[in-house]
Length: 200
Image (cartoon, rainbow, N blue to C red; front, side, top):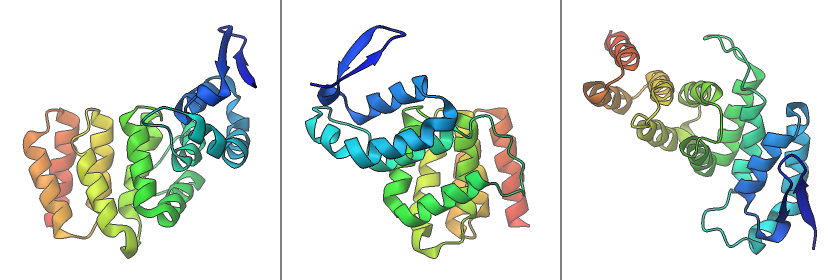
């Protein structure tokens, strides 16, 4: 049986007993960032199905999560500026447009498990809110609304910015409700400012 060896920790793992999430974590830790997209592509194409079937884990990483992981990890040191679209923004929008609700659920799972850096995750929430895609609008609204309750202030901030882009009364109502319970001063002030701006 094939084995994956991590010489740094001298650990040995039988491939058939590893769930996909564990393999992703192992790769992100050991593989140079520049090679991550290629490695994840090979894993997805050659090994995902077999490993997924062999794993007894109740909550394995999904193929969509595998596709999103390298995108966020290669962007962890990127400097994002409001109003300037980057290749990261385009990739996030494309992933949500093509994957729809399933892609949003995959991203939410990665955020909740803290498997992706917070800064690009925050930027992704802004991108998701700003997308002009009526087909995914309801799913994107629900996704951002849920993340207004996330434990991390930066994620709540990203959800706030994302909702501020959505031209819907529901988005404003979500922000008004959220600001009343927000305990982080910076996020609360951002919410209040955006609410005032939306209300005109």
